[in-house]
Amino acid sequence: QVRLVESGGGLVQAGGSLRLSCAASGINFRLYDMHWFRQSPGNERELVASISSGGTKTYSDSVKGRFTISRDNVWNRVYLDMGSLEPEDTATYLCTTRHRGNNYWGQGTRVTVSA
Image (cartoon, rainbow, N blue to C red; front, side, top):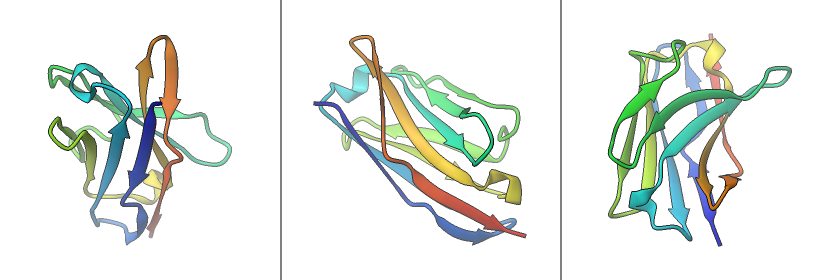
């Protein structure tokens, strides 16, 4: 059973930083591409960052240069280090992966950036 559990969200002032974590279980983690999405009310779910099984990283233009995705294949975790946060980054952040043709999502962790 695939399970993804995000943590690390919270309230932060603009310009601040947060580290999000996603713990994965039920998969051979090192073989899977992992992704961070975010969603805020009234907006579509947005792909923020991805890291391939081989460690290749990609970012949306909106976060490039401010966010860093990384993974730990020993602890089966993917991280999102967020810096220079802006109020527009306020959203629920979710990690996801695809396993046997199905997309699996965590429950999300809420990030609120105050002006």
